[in-house]
Every structure is written in C-alpha cells, then in structure tokens.
Image: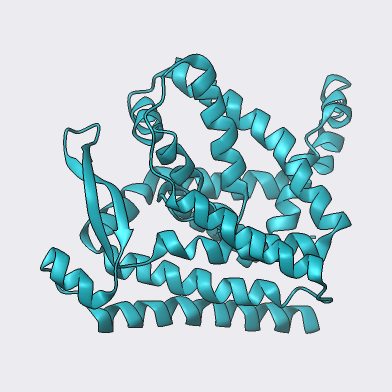
Length: 311
C-alpha cells in the first residue's frame, strides 16, 4: 500500500520521464528503469487487457481500477503529461543554449545507470554477455542512423506512433529520436501545438497499438529470461551513449516549424577537435562537473534504494 509521500515520489518520476521523452536522444524508459518502476509499469500497462476491460462493462469499476494498478498509472502519467507541457520548453531551451552541459549530465547519468543495472544480473552466462553486446550494437546503429524524409500518409503517422512509443518504453532508445529518424519529430510537434486532431488521433492510435503489443514482449522477456533481458536493456543504455556524447560537429542543418535553422545531422568529435571545427569553447571542466553530478545522483538513488530494501 503506497502512502502519500510514495505518490509524490512517483509523480516526480513521471516528471523526469516526461522531460526525458521530449529530448531526442534521451529515453523515458531509461528513467523508469533506473528509478525502479520499470517492471511495475510494464505489468500495469499489460493489465489493460480484454478480461479487465470487460469489468467496466459489468459496472465493476473498482475491480477494474485495482486490476490495472490505476493509482500508479494515473499518478505516473499525470507527471509525464505535466512535464511534457511545462518542462519541455525548458529542456529544449537548455539543449539549444547549453548543449554540452546538458548532454554531459545525461551522459554521466546513463553511463553509471548502465553499470547499476548490470548489477541486477545474478548469473553470467554466454547468452547474457551476447545479449548485452547485441543491445550495445542495436542502440549504436539506431542512434547513428541518418534522419529520413517520409510521407505524411495516415499509415505512416500510425506507424510512427507504434515505433515511437515502442522505443520510448525501451531504456536507452529515445522515442523522440525515432520520430526524428522517421522525419516525423517536427511534424508531430506541429500537430500537437496546432491541435491537429486528425494527426494526433492517428498518432495516438499507433501509440496504443505499440503499447498493447510491445509491452507484452518486454514483460515476457523479463519474467522468463530476466538476466538476458536486463543485459539487453543495459546494452541499449550503453549503446545510446553515442548519441549523448557532448561534443558534436554539425554536418547538415534543416529548417524547423518556426523557420529556424537547426542541426539535422552531426558527428561526435573530441573536445580539442570541437574547438577546431566550431571555434567555440568545449568547456571541458564544466562538462566533467555535470557528468559527475549525473554520476552522483544515481549513486545516491541506488544507496537510498538499498536502504529501503534492507528495512
């Protein structure tokens, strides 16, 4: 039974997930994973199934709410929605104004998180090692992909929802970045800002399809092959560090929905190269400090979690 303070903490986790989901390259699934609510989230979403939905038609609203872990989903998704609405503009501003500091923070956060996650593996076998390596390569390949130009047809919008929400669930793979690769990031943001209900409806339809199907796959893997699944997810997180590297050289720009020129294709460079190709200060000391802050936050969270488990 959760207490008020537990729901406040859950709401804050929702805020963190929502903020992460808006920034291409950062995964809300990672936040859920490192904050200890990932498996509960999967099980709760999976519980929204036909047998439980039938309870609604029978008038058994309380039974339905308890079956789907309604309080958990309501508080968490409220936090996510509030964050998307309020923190999104702040994070986008930080990404544009202080990119090195922001990416350094996330790089440190995800790096140490992957190490913490690997500690959940209680038995190392060759299949576990292979799963981790596969996760690294898959995430690296996805985050290295070049954004494409795709059609705005109804089926493509639905497919974008399916792939975007599926990636959003996976730690290390950003749903926003998948939309960027599909050429639908600006398109969906514009639809949301202009309240284009046709596009929003089609996109949400895809999200529902993705949630209903993909959550079951991940939940099954975690229950049947826990160590392999954890290694795979940790691999995703480590592979995504490629996208989060703070120092980048922009190779190509494109116009956003405001008519502004923004980076479209970039490549990672070393700090000394960053100064040579951009003429800008790589702020190495600041970057290291923000990486350390990311490390410190996860270490503290892990210690608190261990203390709670020991009680």
